[in-house]
Image 1: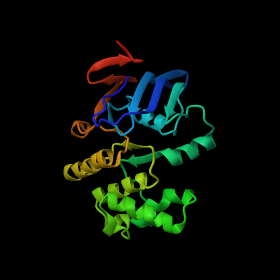
Image 2: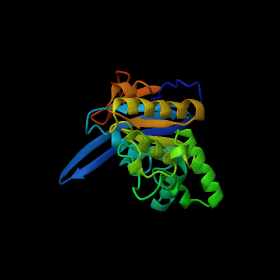
Image 3: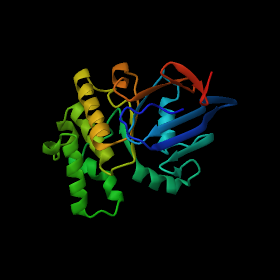
Image 4: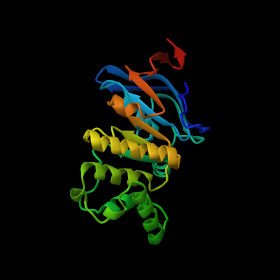
Length: 244
């Protein structure tokens, strides 16, 4: 199952094959994802929609190496991450994945600059190199003038911009966004989506986003719907890559 690529960029970045995810609840097995296949090209913007409990966030967690599937494989830029050790997966995640969450997850006692710098503290970059990376990331999101402000001094939209700067500061292979506009008013949400589109169009970023908002999803290159653990693309029901 390959999503359309609205940007004309080529090259499969993420390959998901036969993913199942099952949780044990007492004696009962809960199937969250079933036989899921997916290809995402480099520079593609993909949205996932679906009702609560359909497996959207579970899928994002699997793609980001925060969880492992029960069955199947996930390959990112040639790295098969499904069977990596916990330590290797942590290193892989730090290099390749940028996370954007609904609630920003900024540290209140740190400035915008310090929040964005956090992922770089795990690298071998010098202080001067870290500063250059942070300033570049904050400039990309339009907050170069607010780098010394604390989260409490910023609006919700600005806090999310700081969170996006933190996500891109390491130049990850792809960004995972879980309801990035879910806590924002429509104007701020539109501004954040314009920023994400700019990251895709002008900076070649690959973005996979969970959203409940159809207006947000329409801005992606392709939208998939998750329904009872099965992927549905543009209304055409697909199970394990085959027409139902």
